Length: 253
Image (cartoon, rainbow, N blue to C red):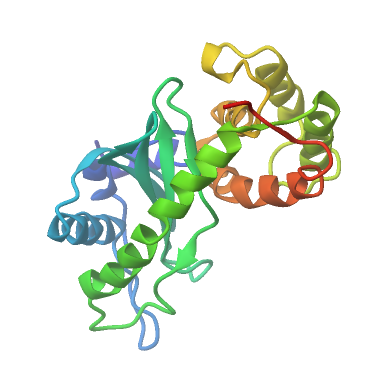
């Protein structure tokens, strides 16, 4: 695909790693050395291979000017109906630092969720930087989050939410603007939660509510989707914390 054709739909469509190679990288300066997006991804895949972790699926999104890149790499490792994923972001306009986050893909609905926002692994782009060394530290940090994330999913699956509590979370997310996501998705999240299309989400749990959000996020363009998804888990933890002791009821074993 020619560069002009690819950039025409950047920001609105997900692209492949091969297409990342076509994205132009701006010239560097004495204090800032832009890093080609595809080289960063290649170094990440190499870092994972050193740990015997295979990537089974990957997708990327780039801003219209080619400066910002977000991506997700689904890993071969699975747990409890989910597959571990890594999120990556980079920018060549100094707007954000190279960063990683850990997440999972839900098998029954293909929803993507992240355990938290992106964690920077590089302070600034400079010459002679070793991407593999830097990403190795980042991947090690992400792997330490695998077990806590599994426990979080288990807890969410076992936590019922009263209907009023779920409605309040949706209200806080969109009406009060506590979650950086378009307000028009409020109805979509509500419908996905109270009338789920996936039988597994019929129990009104925190897990079901999380998937109602991530299902609705699929309506967004790729970069807004990645951003909203990365902030969802921490929002839900805060938004439901005050409800759990008094209102949330654990599922019977």
